[in-house]
Length: 275
Image (cartoon, rainbow, N blue to C red; front, side, top):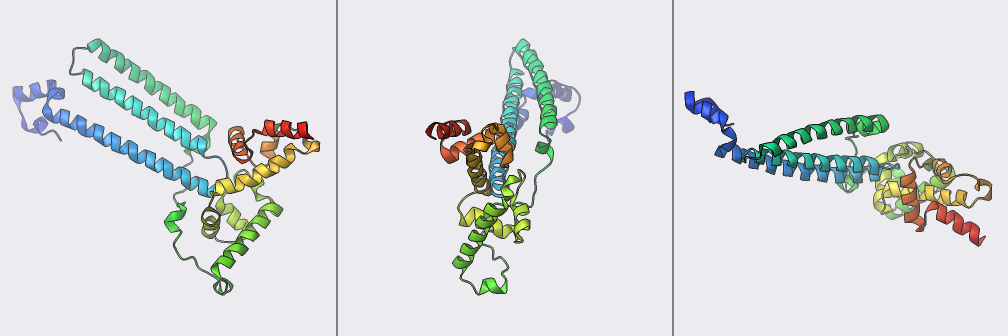
């Protein structure tokens, strides 16, 4: 995009190639690159926020690890980028030693980031399995008209929702599908023989809570029963969290404290002290 690369000849072109970093068009391009990078970063953060909400509405297992890692990666790339920008600014100064140091530093950072990717891929392969692009936020299709059966058309909409909610709660209590740590809206809908979109709206919109929180509520209540069950007194908290469908100690502790205002250990100790 720099015209002088193509339309100058001889000494003028040689001088331009040797001092191109000091030319006005290259400085303008540097500003445009910074603006572009800032816009990309803002859009990435918006997409991450949307992705986190989509998974909360459709999955029952913790998405925080993936979200936090991608967020950390975005911040890391931003820091590295601005180090590189600082390096480019140094080209216009006489600090050649600092420029050499920054170049070496960026090479070390590149090695660290590459190693970090490899270790993450080995420890958390699910991070790299892609995203289900068919998933949508509830508000994207909440107002769409879902196909109804003849019996549903004859029922009052509010009455139909109430019946569906009762059936859902009964199924959760009796069949305990939440014990599956990988439970999703789609898999639960198949078990209940109803459209996944309808079930998603029923939980996320009509119950005014994410599917993630809805399922974890049943898991926590089951965990509370096990923690206060004398026959399970010798079971560790780790064993119990796996029994009720959690697959992460940190997500279990967070959800448990959100529901009871106590950690699992505090809850168990408090129960046995008062009983």
